[in-house]
Image (cartoon, rainbow, N blue to C red; front, side, top):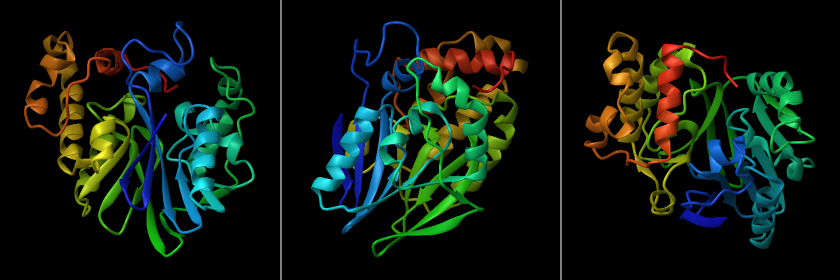
Amino acid sequence: MRVLRPYPHVLAFYDGRIDGVRAYSSEPNWLDDGAYALGICSYAIVDGAEALVYDTHISLAHARLIRSTLAAQGVSSIRVLLSHWHDDHVAGNEVFADCEIIASARTLEALRAHKEKMENAAPPIKPLIMPNHILDGDMTLHIGKMSVEVRHVDIHSFDAAVLVLPDGLLLAGDTLEDPITYVDEPSRLNIHLADLERMAGWNIQRILPNHGDADIIAAGGYEASFIDATSRYVEALLAVPDKPETGAQDLKTFAAHIFAAGAITYFAPYESVHQRNVRSVLTPVKPR
């Protein structure tokens, strides 16, 4: 795992996107196929001795490295905020069990509903540690002298929570992925699209996603046009049932007009994500 510092007050803990390398198994599994192959990043906002960890990563080993890195930098007080309930964002919760783990009521609801499945998955997240501080709507968190806004959106997952820093930096979780969103709730795509439009109205200068290019993240993240690129892809997906010929296209062809704008970059492992997305809008599947 690489530790990046895109901003003086932000650490990025990045792993994956290594050609031909799998972290867990050659068999299909959530860690490799849903996270590691695509590149996965968790973040910490740090001010003095205080830190807010944004997602606990894909394993206990990753979470321990996050915690030891923060301790080595003099952090003695850690809180955790979960961006949403999916496996690759909560797998390291046990390492932070003695900390305040913050999440929305919706995230807690989803974790409780999927607890048995997640504890018996490959790899298992066992025990699955639940959040112990539940948010009631949007709020402001204070990390040292810094103020960070927690805003709830319905993008990618119905329980998503993103962070907005005073300098216009957005920590986006999975609401934005480079190059394309991973559709987990196809029946809610129109809702996702509406919240992407709402997000586009915020005063965002740069964006750090949980799935993206490590070099771009290290250099300070993505431009605000990343939001529009995601919206355009969702719009194209929603049109597939009326334009079935587009559903047969590969990602590079399907999203060629979006790639041409330059906000996102083609990455071959997302071909399988795109194929799954197309299947989901043609034959909606239950969220994982």
